[in-house]
Length: 328
Image 1 (cartoon, rainbow, N blue to C red):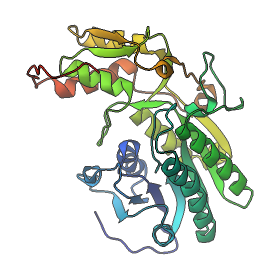
Image 2 (image 1 turned 60 degrees about the vertical axis):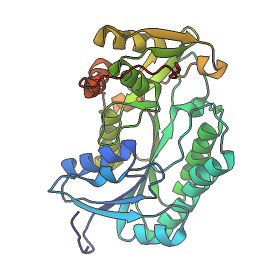
Image 3 (image 1 turned 45 degrees about the vertical axis):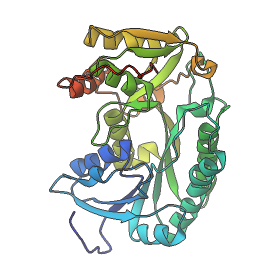
Image 4 (image 1 turned 60 degrees about the horizontal axis):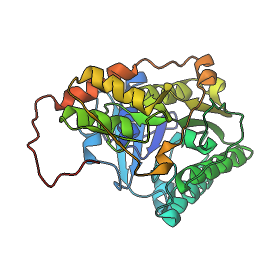
């Protein structure tokens, strides 16, 4: 990474959680968009990975601070000279989980509150935040950004509290854009396999059956990681169009069984395994992306292409049978 000294005209964008799944893609896309932007990354490496800052584009200027958004000294240093903050750092959870509630509350809610106060002190102009469509709660209908939110589970609840803190803070002079992301999937410099779509692609790639809860008709909002990054870049470059707005960042709403069937068409020998392990996974989540499309964004990577790209990563490996292996 290049070391740089900044003058008053330098444009520095801080990406918190920049070594994570979405962050690893975004820090590259920002530079591809404008190589004059200095990308400063703040990450505590709890869920990030050093590989995210390996083989960065040569034309880019990058700075890395290893630290936590809960540490005021760290955030004060990270915000020096920053014009825009893209806040990705969070403790991620499945929407209906209440595990580690106190920690999730501390990071996702209060971490955002403290970061906002530090931004005001540092005179940061813009704050771009990634939330989740899970803030709406389970729904069989497409929900719009102006509909009431009924978040269930500590992850969705803390993201909704963070959204509220951002809108309140905007009254004190900071501009904001909020993106409510669907379930991220797809290949990135750092790829996570905790979401069901990525997990399905992995299982198909190594020749194992896909586990489906219930009948699989429950819907999920899916967003390819590179489509998500492009939307955030759109907000970065078009502040007047996206300021003070909340967008559903969703490629499409699709049933779990349909995703499994697409993977079967891409990997013919893939079998399905149905289970009733957790009733909470039977709930549906669906969100309308019309508003973001009217602002010039549209998903460029299709579900079929995104899944095929992932499955292809495992094409040269054979998994030997293990008698103790259980289906999951």
